[in-house]
Image 1 (cartoon, helix red, strand yellow):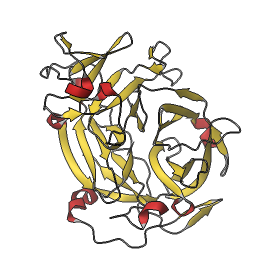
Image 2 (cartoon, helix red, strand yellow; image 1 turned 90 degrees about the horizontal axis):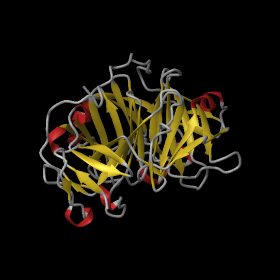
Image 3 (cartoon, rainbow, N blue to C red; image 1 turned 180 degrees about the vertical axis):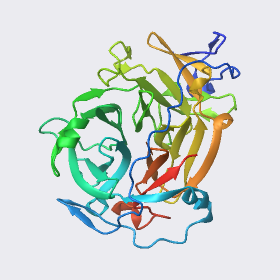
Amino acid sequence: MLTVRNLAGAAIASTLLLTGCTVGPRQAAPISQAKPAAASAEPQIAAKPFLEKVTVGEFTQEKAVTSSPAMPPAYKRFFEAGSFGPVIPGLKQGLVPQGITYMPEQNWAVFASYRYDGGASTLSVVDLATGKLIKTLKMFENDSTPYKGHAGGITASASHLWVGSENLVRAISLKDIVQAEDGGHVVFNEKFKPEKKASFIAYSSDGVLWAGDFYDTPNPTAERHLMQSTDKKAYKAWTVGYRLDSATDLPRKETPSDSGRLVPDYIFSITDKIQGFAVSQGKVLLSQSAGRSNDSQLLIYRDVRSEKPHAQVKLADREVPLWFLDGSDLKDQLAMPPMSEGLQPVGSQVAVTFESGAGIYSSAGKYPMDQVYFFKAN
C-alpha cells in the first residue's frame, strides 16, 4: 500500500483508485527546497525564420504546411506573446516530432522524432543562429540495435542528452552528439527506470531531471498517482524529479529504488493529457494536448517548491515531498493549436514544438504547425 502523510504527520487512507487521496490544508511557510534560477543570457536566434528548403543527407528541412485556415481567435494571445522559430526537420521524410531541447554551448536546438515507417528514431540538430538543419542522427540501443521507440521527450543536462520513452529514461553523451556526423548513430550509455513512466522529460537549471506520465482514458497511470487536491479535483498523473550528482551528471548513487525503479526527490501531482513540461523563471509550464482537432493548452503555474509540501509520499524507505499543480497556483492558461508536444526554455523564452506538421497528421488537422514557436513566458 502507498502511504501518504499530511504535514501534521497523520496517515491518510489510500485506496487511491476508488476514493482518491485527500491532503490537509496548504501551509505557506517557506522552505529551501528550490529557488528560481536566474534567466540566462539570451541566445542568438535568427531574427527571421529560414523558410527555404534545406537538404542535409537523407533528410530535409522544409515547410510541410503550405496553407492554413484562418487563425482561430482563441490562439491570439499565444501568438501575440512570441514569434515563430525554425521549421521542424524531417517532416517530409516521415519523422513525427516529439521533444525539443537546447544545447547552449553550441546554440543548437535538438528535436527527437519517431518514424511511422518503423525506422530508427532520430535527433535533428538545428543551428538557432541560422535556423538551418545541421545534421540528423539515429538513436541506437547499442552498436547494432536501432532504437525505434516513441522518444516522447528529450532534455539536455550538463553532459548528457536524456530521452524519455515508455518506462525507461535513457542518456546519450553530449560529446557524442557534437562529434557525430550527419547520418551517423549515437548510442545510449546510461539507462534507468523512473518511478513510473517517462512520457515526457525535462531538466531544470537547479540540477533536477524530471520525468512525467501522460494520463488519458486509454493511457492509465499507476493507481497510486490518482489523488485529490485541496481544490477537490482529481489529479491522475505525476511528474517526478531526480537531483543529479554534480560530478557525474547522473542520478545520485544513494538514490533508493522501489522494485527496480529509482525513487525521486520531488513529485508534482499534475492534470491529465500532458505532453511537455518545463521549469523557467519561477514557473512550471505544461503542454496539454490530445487529438488533431482539439485545442492544446499551455498551463503556467507557480513553482510551488518554495512552499512546504502539500503531502509526503512514502516510496521504498523515503518520504518524498509532493506538491499539487492545481487551480490555486495556475497563473495563466493559453489556447494553442492542436498537438503541442515538448517545451524547452531558451533564454527567457520557451520553445513549443508540435507534431501536427507530420505527414500522418497535417492533411486532416485543424491548424497544423510545422515550425517551433518561441513563447515569452513573462
